[in-house]
Every structure is written in C-alpha cells, then in structure tokens.
Image 1 (cartoon, rainbow, N blue to C red):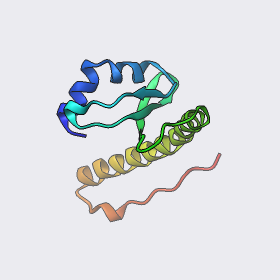
Image 2: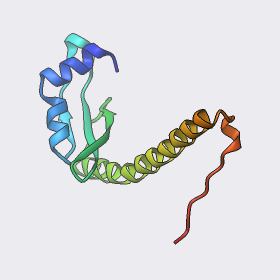
Image 3: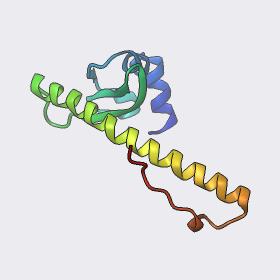
Length: 115
C-alpha cells in the first residue's frame, strides 16, 4: 500500500482503531486518494496485531454475516501467520549458524521435535 494511503489511515484513526479492536471496521470511500469503500479487520494473537485483512466493497456492502465471516477468517489467518513466523525464525537461526560456521545453508536441516 502506498505510503500516502497508510499516512491517511493513521491520520483518520483507522490503523489505531484496528490495532485496538477485534471487530471489522467499515471504512468509507476516500475519493481524494482514490479509495473505494472497504472493510478491514486485524489479525491478532492476544493483544498483538500480526496483520490485517482488507476487503474492497465493490458493487455491494458486506452483510452482518459477511462481517462475522471476516472476523472468523482473521482468527484462522492467525494460526497461518504464527506458523509462518515460526518457520521464518527457524530459517533465520539456521542462516546465522551457517554464517558463523562458514558453511553453506544446505548443510543444515531441521525437523520438529516430538515430545
């Protein structure tokens, strides 16, 4: 997303509202920056925001059921983002070990430890 749009979202209180709520936020169009109506919801783990889902309302408005589904999708996306972050951290650790040992990355492999 362009910086000017992100700045506008901060100025209008959209990002702070998303950061403080689990509920979908209806965002009216902003013609002056070329944005149509949209709905956004934060993807959260406890009080930490992991990301956002943005839905463009083109030609129709989300119903109450659609807003509920969006909130449900955010809860499911949380697990995917957490798994992705775990995988990225493992790769980062392996890269650091590889660099320290001056070995090529493919020398290392990892597997989950079953307990």
